[in-house]
Length: 333
Image (cartoon, rainbow, N blue to C red):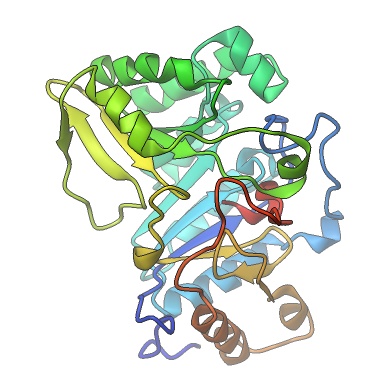
């Protein structure tokens, strides 16, 4: 057992109570800013953490003060047995919040099981409200499946349902008004995310991010933005509502106005590496010590030492001289 009096505090005094876990590096889409059309090399199945290993690491992390876990991928709903695994996580004493980020393709099929497992919040990636453009961005015709999944989640009472929109200049930035209007009529939380150049696509493409400062001005022309107070489990988004809207608008500014000083996250990759920062290739192997029989105290020490290496801020700019090697599909960004 870990010592619950010891918590994950980094060298800058930040309390790290949020763990993002990538349960698989597989994805059923090939988004143009994330993967090349041919995909990326996949980890062998025996290199991916088993559910037992994931459970043990989650339990140890919670013993060190982790209160919030988000499951990501790749696409987490691709992994066989994921819905059976969810109730095991929600039952761990000390875990106050468990959520999932999905591309929504299989959400309609699994929404009821996810809700029954005790999960109340869900994030869905949706970069366009135009079927043809959605297919161009993701390279697959799955738009209507995603909409059906979002609607199923709404009817089951998931709240909030956050729609993550990665905004890229010249690709989908003209749809900002459409997403804003969606928040007027529906209880969805729209999250505009600045494009981050990572992985193999960063060196192949010449995509340009748009700062959320620019987007905020554009949104403000549609309606007055009213600041929403932060909640106890809020992520990095600046939250706003337009007067009379059923939903919200959020801005996640990883590049233009980064939130590093208040970052409370660690990330566990699908192949068992613990990363103190998304936008850094620094990571620590947890899988090897797990599989050679390390006890809980030894694993906890790796958590603690990794937390101490968390940088105060990232150094990625809109035009990095050295793009990050890490692939988002396995990091669980």
